[in-house]
Length: 390
Image: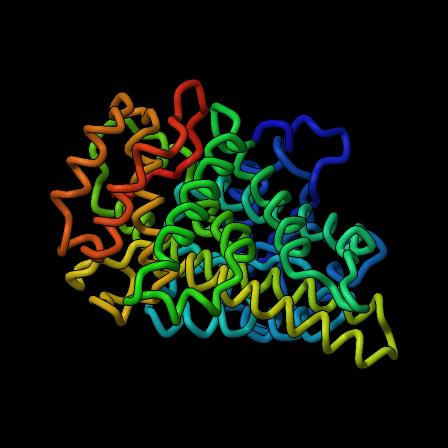
């Protein structure tokens, strides 16, 4: 992500803290990488954010003498001029309730002091790239207008968002991400088609839009954007804090998708301003697609025996689409090279997965997939795209 620093029009970061020592430290850390504006009060921060050249991102302390960070964030998000600017709280307040309050106000991230410079820089770059992609999506909303009877086709809307997010993923990897994404879709499509003929799942799958599911699958690991690349590509065993970052990525992914859904809905509303029927038809389809994407993002690491994350769901309490995604996700991951191991063969991967039958995976779904696997294309020559998961 060094290209952000080398760009002649470097991103503008507003740092807000009433401690001048902290401001000087942040200025020294960030000024070689971004353009910097500094504010020692909440009111000055709001003035700078509403200026002719608004910041691309705000780093905001919470405890300040005039307006606290929560109030500054609330006002930024309530103003149409500044509501799209990502806000990252930098604070010594580390209680869960403090974080929950910050996210409820619309903050993009929450980093506790003392600050680790590599983590801070990675988080800033991540949110700057997400903002860039969101800006591109807004500017290109006419490309989202694939119409069917006057409404937006949800597959196409998801595909546009997925393309932007996959582009961001590719910038965080040493290799191209696209080939394995297509393989994941192919495996998922084949598994669903195989299961449709089986009585146990027939009724539920009959209501499923397979192509919409395949598009939604591309969002499942978007939460990994918040995990530093050094953690994702670490060839050594993960520390407890590093593993905690991995474990939280499904929740972070759900938040990102919710924001993207809101952005696309606003884009459609602006495009069909005053045409309530077309807006309703389009947004209803969009919500179905993004709801599916959020389900996959949050629950694809749940385990059949209830020991997965983030919610510890068990058995059929795990949504069926997430149980399907879990099998395909692990299969493709095992066939892919990692910094910490070579790829497994198809036979080795299936043996390892069968060891998790009834514990990690839905046994009936896994049996069906094992029967299907020999008919699927191999990953020979394809690049690694699946994020590291413990």
